[in-house]
Each structure stands twice: as C-alpha cells, then as structure tokens.
Amino acid sequence: MWLGLRDNYAYFDRKQTDWNKVREFYRPLLRDVRSRSDFVSLLERVLDELYDNHSSLNTNLKTSSRLVPTGLDLWAEWRQNRAVITQLRRGFSAEQAGLRVGMEIISINGLPIEEAVARRLPKSLKTINLHARNWALRAVLAGTHDRPRIITAKNRNGVVAVYRLDLPTQTTVDS
Image (cartoon, rainbow, N blue to C red; front, side, top):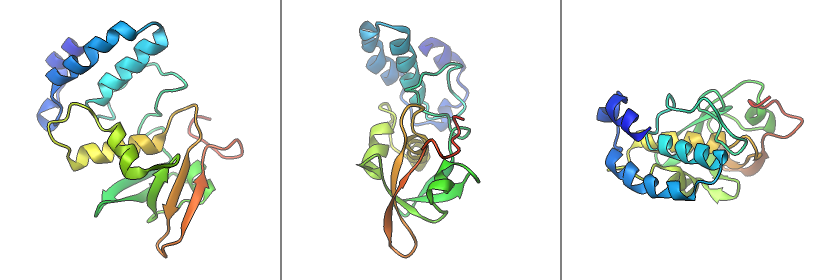
C-alpha cells in the first residue's frame, strides 16, 4: 500500500505529509498485527496521514471513524483559534441534540477540542497547517461507529452546555 500510494497518489504536492516518515513510523507496527481488525486499523491510520477525505478503505469496523463528509452531521472550522460549527445536517443527531451553527466546540467526549484534534493530526506532517487542523477537527467530530459523542459547546451568548449525540432516539448517519 505504501509503495502504491507513493507512486500514484496525486496530491503529495499539496500535502505536508512526509511519506517516508509514514513508512518508518508504521512499518514496525506490522509485527503487532494479529487479526484482520488489527490490520484494517493499521491501514486506516496510514491513510489518515494523507488527511484526505477521498482516501479510505472499502471496509470498516465498528471502531472505525465515520467517513467525512458522508458520516458527519455537523461541519466545523477553525476560526480565530476556535472550533466553530459552520453547518448542520438537517434532521440528524447533532441538530436533534440542540447544537446550532455558530456555536464554539469546547470539548468532545470529555477531551478539550484542541487536545482531541492534536491527537488526531497525522504523525508525519512537516508542518501543521490549517487544512490538516480542519481535517482533524472534522474527523474527531465524526466520531466512530461504536461510540456516542458528547460535545460541550458554547453558544453566541457565552452559555456552555453539554450535548449528547448518537442516542437511540436520534437519527444518526449510521442508521
């Protein structure tokens, strides 16, 4: 996969990905692969290094991240170092939970949004740019298929509240 992408991926000129570093970092992790699930998870992590929503596997696990944009019910961007909701998918979990456009996301699943995004950023970046930070923000907000999301957000009046998404009573992108 690494060789195939090295030779055929069309957007390396637009990315800050050090593809050689990807190989150095992930190749040793192959020795810990014991199952198909382990292998799929490792391949997903390698593809995440491209921070490209068009690069994904044709398979996923319950623990896999939802795909962006199709698996995302809210869209956010970094604006003046704040994670701000810019769009909501009408009738889905984020809107049903009470989130609104313009709210600032403070945390997800108890983790400050800045920390969650920093953990999700690719490991091989030469420099961290806004494009990579926005990709990581949206990937974090999409969550995984197996875990409900809990988002703490602040409205335009400064009121902070907790919003529970992906509840059985809500319409989710997985259903």
